[in-house]
Image (cartoon, rainbow, N blue to C red; front, side):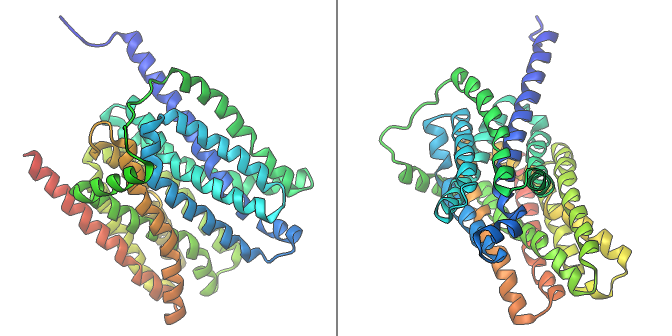
Length: 409
């Protein structure tokens, strides 16, 4: 007797997958837009607060430091609550944070940045658990990559939508408050799902700190998870240095700020497209093979930028766009690899533990690049040095892919 699912059941399963994916993607968009809201409005916010626009750098640091510590405990929180409950908590934190940010009171704005960091840090572990439960293994890299496309889309919302709204409503605070609409709507949908989600089995007698330490130990003792932790740190450092210094390096060699900005936007679009495209490729050839390829190609293109001042404009343009597709396109494949590699029932815990290393790369990568530039005084030479993280990642990914094949055979 055939045990194949009925046609109606298959359609319902697919509908549930795509609806869940859409909801998680919009949550990602809301989180990213909230994180970048102040960055997009920095000049006019700085004028209101009577501070220099460069102070935005401190706000970004608050966000990512808070995200680092939130990611460390996210797996424990998912185990104690549920993925849907954590997403609901994230949305509440975004709503409260946006209200605090719009207050224009420095103390509340700092606290809002901490709340945004916590929300951002717990997002991926919770959404990975939710998507893992509804996604067939053969589609996992594509689905996770589509969800991660919410990051550049959120950046577009912040950078393109908020300044226009600020002009339309004659105030940056009103623009900030307008962002609350999306998380409020998403919270209503999420609370409905929270009530229908089976409660996870609680871990008795283990505190959040002890659980976080145990999760780190589990990652560091598993060769595949340990490799993914290293890749997250290396690739996030490479990504942030490319996105942070691409435009300024072009201006340094004589490009106009307008032309450099256009190429910077094209680089981001390439990264968004790459997230989806690499997801399709990874479902076909395996995530570690694709991550290895992205490391080698991204590192090689970064090394090519050593010749940035002498490259023809057309070659430099193609190089930068391809670098964007590699340096910013790895995230979805990476998260899918964690979900595929983690032991059963440990997707949220492994994702949270491993993403803490990604946050470390985000925090230290641009700082190390800036320090090297201070010593060497050359953006092309700095890009050549920063080919090293990508190339090391390529070696680690290839080694893990080959070892995985060996184990399977």
